[in-house]
Image 1 (cartoon, rainbow, N blue to C red):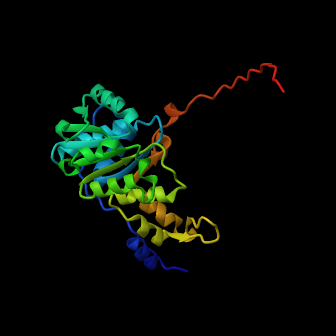
Image 2: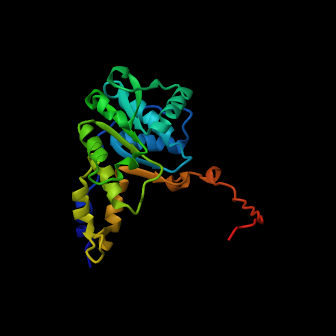
Image 3: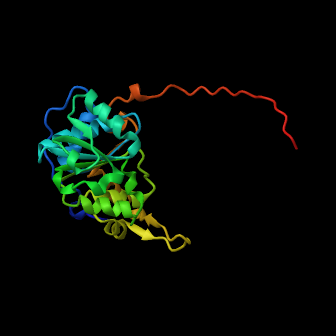
Amino acid sequence: MISQDYAEFLAKKAPRAQATGIDAKEMPAHLFNYQKDVAAFCLKQGRAGLFLDTGLGKTAVQLEWCRQAASATNGRALLLTPLAVAAQIEREAHRFGYEARVIREQSDVRDGINICNYDRLHLIEPETFGAVSLDESSILKSFGGKQSRALIEAFSGTRFRLAATATPAPNDHMELGQHAEFLGQMSSMEMLSRWFINDTSTASQQWRLKRSAVQNFWDWVSSWARAAQSPADLGYDGSAFVLPPLNIVRHQTETEVDA
């Protein structure tokens, strides 16, 4: 049986993300309390994962994080996003009074929040931004993919980094590894070698989490990321976010089908 002293020694040896950011300043009134706490955590960490489910205000947290992170550096934040939602994020930013605009190339960059499509990454200079946030960051999922490597390398020296997605795949550990590597927390291969086993019993040779490492692994993830499907997951009242029961009405029609 492990002694308490030895257990405490092992706990101290367990990897934890080191906070490299700032203490959050006063949060705006439009954020819910749980959003303020998540934004403060991500700012404190400096390099963090933001995994709030659909409807929990991921974009609002991103915008406030960008504002404060930019203010703490050179005044410029980059928010990379898929093409389809760039204008939507710009509208939401203006709605809440943020200084933001959609940019297409480096000459468009200004102080404040600069929103850009992923496919225009090659037209901007990453080192000119004090903070970067990846919207729909599951784009990092492809291990060794060209876009994933480009993002990791382009912002490896950026002090403030945020990876935000409403749809992280909790059972896709490679995706979490890519997020950790982008954020500078740990390389994907180190993560795999520390907590996973290469399952050679299957043709795909998938990596699986060691049974003895489950608690330690998720403790490590929670040291640099916040995930929630409801405010209740973060200790808040989530009753206002419970959807009403779905009413399903089935309609049956008759038709003639040619043989």
